[in-house]
Image 1 (tube, rainbow, N blue to C red):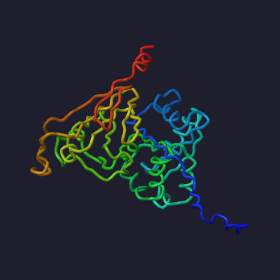
Image 2: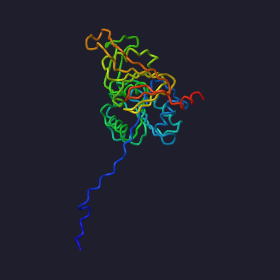
Image 3: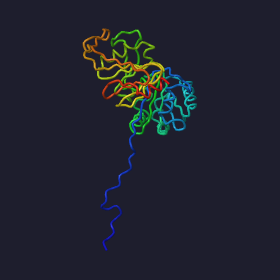
Image 4: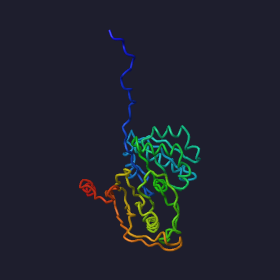
Length: 295
């Protein structure tokens, strides 16, 4: 009789089971969305996060000095919509490296950032374990990352942190800073039509002609699958500036001088319209969604 082989000898080692990757989505909101159980945008967030009884939202207010009132208001709305919620003021940067916060994120199906100051938000969480765990969840386990106003503006790799609404198209009128980088193809500006911010995105395109500028009106949002496309919802419009301009003099003029741009492409997209991020083309609503709006 042949001698018994040692257990596992001559056989390939068993590989550890791997979890299937599920790409998450972003929900970028232009600010002042309807904060009630009948509000279209917040309803949509709960649906994206799993629906009534399954959605588990981690609500963060790192974009303001004292966000407790906002946290309570959003918590009330989301719980009325059937979501399980936890809240996080995120007032101190060390909190972003805590085991407790990262573990709470792992249990959540969505994370939501309130409005306030996007520079404060990135200062609190950029490069922390919490910030990187959000990125990993977005890329591998289907996490939904949502934010309104400053919480949306901070999602892009570069963000606008200041600039007058009555400014011109010149570098002196726009302040930029690094964002969180969850949406790498675009830069987001919020309260767009209401605060007259066209000049800010045009200035950005002159300096960064490879990206898309996304202007979100109030009570308006885009649901984004990074690297693929987005769809508009809400009562206003999303204005898309295609940065592939034919000419800019940004490298030739001083900060205080006006900028020149040739052949800027602009798309205005209301509810139901979309945008293909690969082909860089707008998309019409499906016949079913148009019929639903008429009914």
